[in-house]
Length: 254
Image (cartoon, rainbow, N blue to C red; front, side):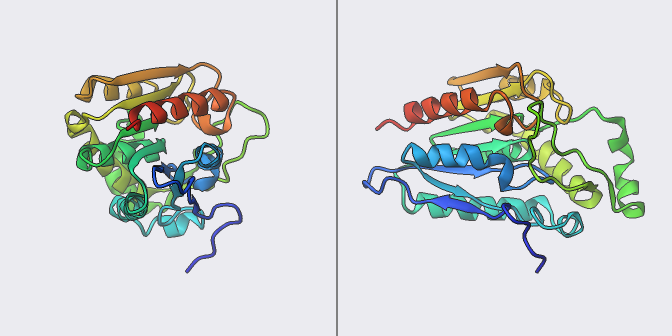
């Protein structure tokens, strides 16, 4: 097994242990790792919530290893972490960034009867990049292209991303995108969507597509004016975390 980069490990917290715990599943993005979501996870734990932040297969190691994984591997890990939370908490919410937000919506579509709410931060459910049309052929010719990490306005921000995009894994992610996009109407639980106004990785129109597609009546989109894609490590992170905590408290109240 390839060694995990320092700081990119999975992370968890037990919660307040008062028998009335709320569990928060925290999911990172494609070619990223738990570093990007660590401030969110730690803030949730500081609020007394139980937290599971898995390192999705193929992430936090090498981009070549990521190329050997698919969205099913990532989903399997996310569900396993969720089940761990569900076994020891009263109510659960999932919070995800980028592909993690896509995966969070997938869980809301498939496990909506169990979840209390979903927070999607710059979720990716479509792209208009014309290069993607060549991906079915390109993925067999070239293993990777230049990476997309560290889209952060705040100086010094570093999510420890991969230097390259693994194209076979990207092709699998596009399958997940299409599936989530097709079944958005199945999302009926309370939903909070954060959208960075200046995102150079995921087009901001993704937020509107989510809001238009879901069936949830309790749904809100919040614009992040000062942050780029990795908003959890950017200028708006404190407000994003505060709003997420308030949302979680509201939707999990007994």
